[in-house]
Length: 165
Length: 401
Image (cartoon, rainbow over all chains, first blue to last red):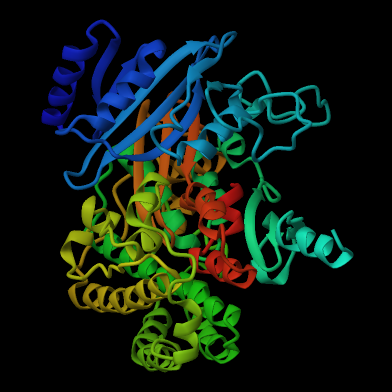
């Protein structure tokens, strides 16, 4: 797995030096953080490079950073014949959540991006049909953002302070 | 233009399409799916799926729950094979903790997972039979699903939403009745499955109905991120159990059945053969069953035995902390996938060190491959579209999370 990390890192450095913000091993996954403007180019390169050939988009999901100021999109890519798996991350300001779509590379990204938009409000530029998918259309919040608590926090009939909640 | 000519023109040239709402609740969709179909007579021109009818905000819920309490959430993803989801979740947390699970517990897990894979495939395949008009197969094979649920009930007390086992292994050894039930199942089920195969596999009517119905090419299946039996039916031999073995799957020999054309018949046959393979895996696991403990040595996460809780202060403290969900999980970020009934079921977990996950994402195979459905049903008959959907085994719980 370390080899894979080094190999991908070398290739990416050659093509996009400066846009790779970090490269590390997290458990059994090589993880790369890419600058958001180049994310589409990086994904395209990883998909089309003959040796790496990450032809399969396993997963695409969103997240919010702990300081609540940034949103992120996480791609899990897979090369089935060689069994290479990597994770690509990109982070951007929560007030300007715009990144290019990956639907032109993988049609499977369509619903996954809609889901990410639905829950985090990430706008994928160039997406053919970017609207809510699991929540109702009238919803005006992005529910998985940390600013929206699960339960009405003003409830006074329930005191759970003993358990640190 | 005479009147007749104008009618002809209307009918044959300026076609007016009709709109048909298939679902959300329709007996043929086996779940809550809505498809707005644009129809030309009985031919589908366009399908627009609407999903989210049973969305239950699992990812948000999971951010507020201790790790052990997330297991019941995973039950409700693919509710036809809940134990696989449970085990997948446990393995994700164990990967984060760096726990080493004893072989004996892993073999027990394999038995559970293969039993639930059989249950999952029984549902899918018998329902394909029903949708083609063959009720008989369904009526006979469904009793074996019941037998599997009886085994689950004996192990954990629940049948469908099992919540089986724990983080780290199992709470105790399975009792004798469980093993008896498993033995009877292994002895009797091949007969039932063979009977089902005889009814459908080479049945002329069934084959005419399913061969070349809703096919998908390997390229398209890959670009739509198909996994599991649906991808294998299209000819790609991708199985997580072989590619990234988990829970000691590398100890067992089994073949991965692969189809060629990715149509309904191939999907049916792949599932059919997988059931035989699952049976052989269970037999191997029982034969090779190693001795040893049933759970990993994880006092922080694993409930101590009851007699110790009553007599021992330390055990009582652990018990209380675990039940109240007050144990901190180390920081980290893991992705773990298992071969669920429908293919690669992934758990992407980010922990910031607290009692609950910081972010948990389920990679639900149904959600990802169901988006190819409009493309697959374009230009085929309505009744074939129903069959295509049931052979893809789209489970509403997994689709909507």
